[in-house]
Length: 246
Image (cartoon, rainbow, N blue to C red; front, side, top):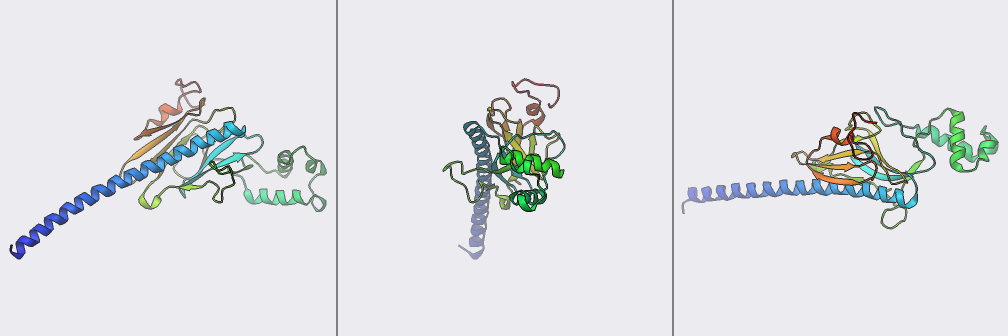
């Protein structure tokens, strides 16, 4: 074989390798995206199980900037307010309030508050006097969903954003519009119900997987591809279509 023939053969082999390797990488990225979406689904199902087994309000908190999510358990009565964005609480002011409550003899905290029936009631009453909204602030990282022991990471999971895998859009019942940034929660209640929600996980190659949460049953469903979000969000608790979101 001449040198030119050898170079042609090497060029053909290189092209074939590039095609095969490229296809393998695309397939691998799609598989990773699916795995990421399945993990989100598993976390949502775990939150439902924990809410019904413990009789306590649980929620999954998504940080769409960092592409992380984790389960929290909420203490006391929690009120959801429908709006354009998630209600945020001034954690610094809340921390100061709790410090004052730990030193009742040297603070201006009313003794009746300190003697409340429970720490939750005391915090709620003190916050009201201080003009501080608690909202859903009395939530903390849930214990490890497998071992039942506290988790060092707070059950935090993170999508593989270095490979372009991320939650592209999240719709939840207490927000007026779908969001792709900020902190968003999906709530599961002790009676076995949940907020309707749609989580769409995708990558830069165009693959998308959708996770649907149903209201009355808290059923979590996995689907390939995008879904018509409005069609799902218009379902009432019984699964029938309504004219607008409640």
